[in-house]
Image 1 (tube, rainbow, N blue to C red):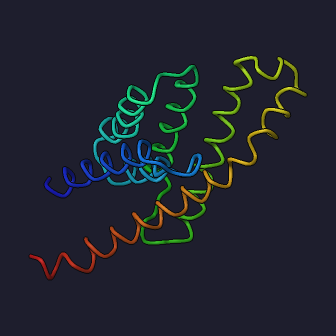
Image 2: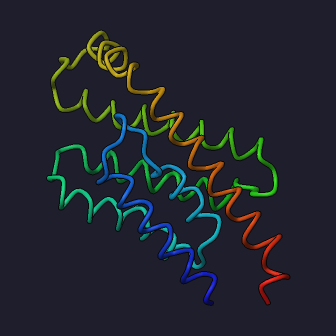
Image 3: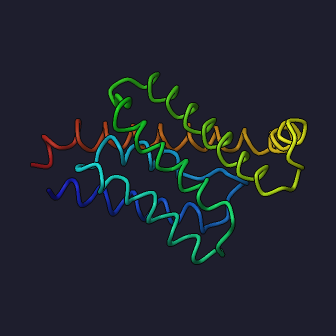
Length: 167
């Protein structure tokens, strides 16, 4: 139980801080938080409240926006992916899942931008919207990879290497 509470607190603090502190565009720990929240936290509803709580708190501080159903939905999907597909003992599956989550976030949120009408309601407008967002995607993918690997390493060191020594 203490391990679960510690994980919740750490994920929440890292997630909110990562959104509020200065960072390159979209280079945040949110994808990793949703993936690892889904993998580590039981029951599922609790793991889902972590990224959604982070989004709610940081959006309240940063300012509400019309894309919140898309950004929050993409985080919820990350939690589902983490629950069913994250194998934390395999770094390559983690990297693939982090890239999948950042790609889904890119596709979902930019679809939301297109629905907002800025690019016109045509297929050409949808493609233009995605093309305009490409310069931000690499930050998204790098952030997901960086923080996912950082969380994986922390899990490995703290709970698999240090736990027997600390007890």
